[in-house]
Image (cartoon, rainbow, N blue to C red):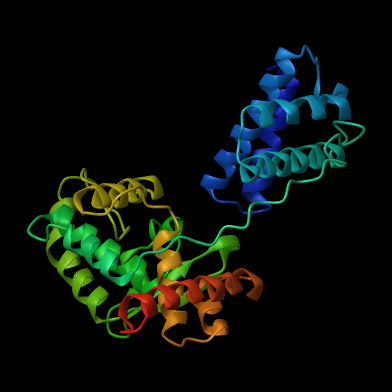
Length: 300
């Protein structure tokens, strides 16, 4: 990459970070997508961002589809690059946005994956509560299921965000939005055991931190670390496959709605800006109820 391209990318990432307040996870995706396009420019001998034209974009998209990427991945890349060139146009680094006319492919309609109650029980049983890490894993699993918070939100929870008397946690969501979520007695018991015992032992291995969940070295547990823990718990249980980052969140919402919670309440708890984002769980709940009926009705 030449110096001008480096500067443009740096300014764009700073814009997303400061003005848009995007998470580090989202910023990494933007950088990855843009750098992939810059590599394509180099291979195609396109000298500068100013010289990128619509036909070049079509060639890039053809290359993506030849890689047999999922529609969702292609849509994300188009969105990232469209935003990047929109920023460059605003800053007058380019004269036009070659991605402006590109249509984003429709994502496949796929219902969120979730755990049935008996599957979830196997995950809880995979936690060895005799060890500090096992206590942490149990508390982590219970809190994710009790609150439906995102993995990225869970990694940011601090000790002071917990109110053990009211059984609530303050969650710092997307776009600096905060919400309080209640949790039940199972999560409370697991958290108290972890904070009183396991966390203290883990903290002794590292430096002082306010983060609730710690890694094996006593430092703050990252979102990536949480995903790895969940996958290891899957491996320890009798379940197969890998856990999706949002699977506990989907399970939380599905179980709530299957047991009669109204959609507005679930929307608030999940921190969804739009009710349409929550409506997908009505379809999931129908599948959940159908499977439960078929499994338990004497004449199913």
